[in-house]
Each structure stands twice: as structure tokens, then as C-alpha cells.
Image 1 (cartoon, rainbow, N blue to C red):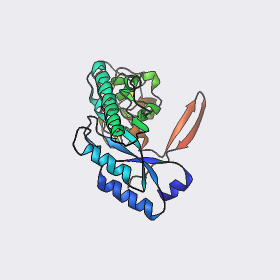
Image 2 (cartoon, helix red, strand yellow):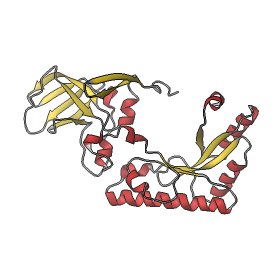
Image 3 (tube, one colour):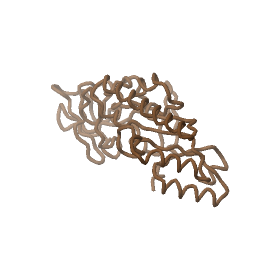
Image 4 (cartoon, one colour):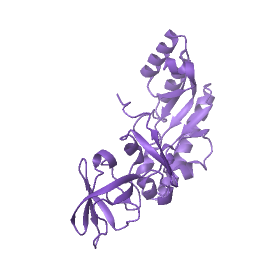
Amino acid sequence: MVALLDRTRLSFIVDHPLVAKQWSDAMVMRGKQVDVLVKVDVGFHRCGIDPDAREAMPMIKTVASLPGLRLRGLLSHAGQAYHAHSEDQLRTMAEAEARTMRDLAERCRKNGVPIDEVSAGATPPARFSLLQDGFTEFRPGNYVYVDRTQVALGAATVDDCALTVLATVVSKPAANRIILDSGSKTLTNDGARGFTPAPGYGTVIGHDDLVIERLSEEHATVKAVNRSTSLEPGDRVQIIPNHACVVSNLVDQVWLVDGATAGPLAVAARGRIT
């Protein structure tokens, strides 16, 4: 972290006073100060402080007072939007998140804590969140690729999906069943979420009748619904995965394709999970 501070400007989140104190001590020891934002739970109930809790304001004041930290503002992630059942529910979630963040930022300012940044981010509600007042930053990370889940949530179309998996038919045990060389180590076992049905483990582009119904480590079992398939061993297909983020984490490089031109791009974070 100290080395990075010498090279670039960065910030990160805290949501517990002990963690904030430890970061402050580490920065003071090295004569540094780092930007932080307090993570706010806006309904996903993963990380973040409860904005309605009695401890919320004391926690924010504590972070603001620590010498090794520079409090920039508040940050949220409405991950519950991935479980929305309708467009109206997505809109309601986006409005509730914005209202929560605006109210908390205003309370901070009234208590003498400057709030310069109010950052939010989730791809499913982005089309509604960007219409709300109060945010200074929005981080819809999945939008870089989008995927089958975003299509099922109405956040993208199939044509918007930039990441596909190129798979080869390696077996055809029956007229209506083929096996691809893209198992759980490629597509992952993540199912698609959304209010539009998306069965199976991906969309085979150009073959709407195919359902990837089962994955083993190296293979995908694919069934042609109600008829046989013309695909034969050796044929290649493109698959839109259910969850692009996980798929990209499983490969060393992606290939950028522009018409007839293609070139590799290394996945720099590959293997960096410790």
C-alpha cells in the first residue's frame, strides 16, 4: 500500500473502527496519509455500517479524526439488486439507496464531518441509480462485459454482452445431446439471476434451442430442446456466461476481437487471491 501511494492516488473502504485504527497507525508509522470511505450497508447486509444504528455517526467521526486517514466520504453497493423480481423493484431499490446515502451524508455534515464523495455502484440498478440526486461517483463494474444475468435483469441485451467463451463440441452421444469442452472450470457453476427465465449455465449464441443443463469439471452437457442439433464434434460455438466476473477470473488472458483482428490481453489479477 505504501509503495502504491508513492506511485498513484488510491482509496479504500473501512466499516469497523478497529480496522480503521490499524490502517491509521500503519500510515502514521510511515509518515503517510491515505484516502478512505466508510462503507454503508444499504440493504445487501454484507459489509458496511448500519446507517440507522446509534453507532453509525460515532464510527464516522472516529474515522474522520484518525491522523493516518483522510475521510473522503461514503460508499455503498446495492448487491440486493441482483435478486430483484421486476423493473419496479429495481427502481425502488435504486431510490432507497440514494435516499439512504443522501440522508447519511447530510447528517454527517450537520455533525461537522465533511463529505466530499458519495459513491455507489451496482450494474443491475444503474439505469435508475444514475437518475438519482446525491451521488458523486457510480461504479457499475460488471458493465465492462455484462453477462447473461444482466440480460435477465434487464440491464443489457444479448448484443451488449462483450465476453463469450469459445467452446468446441467434443462428443455427440445422441442426436439431441452434445458435449462441450467448457465445464465448471471455465463457465463456473453460477446460475443466472433475474426476473427473466435463464435456465442452464450460459447462452449458446445462434442456437436458441440449446440448454447447457449440466457441468462437470471439464465438460458441459448440452441438450437440444424438442429436436436434434446439427452441431457435430469439431464444431465451435460461443457461449455467453451467466457471470462474466467469475469466468474472467479463471483464465490467464482474454482475446480482444475486432472484426478479423484478434489479440491477447493478460488478466493481470489472475492468481492474486491470497
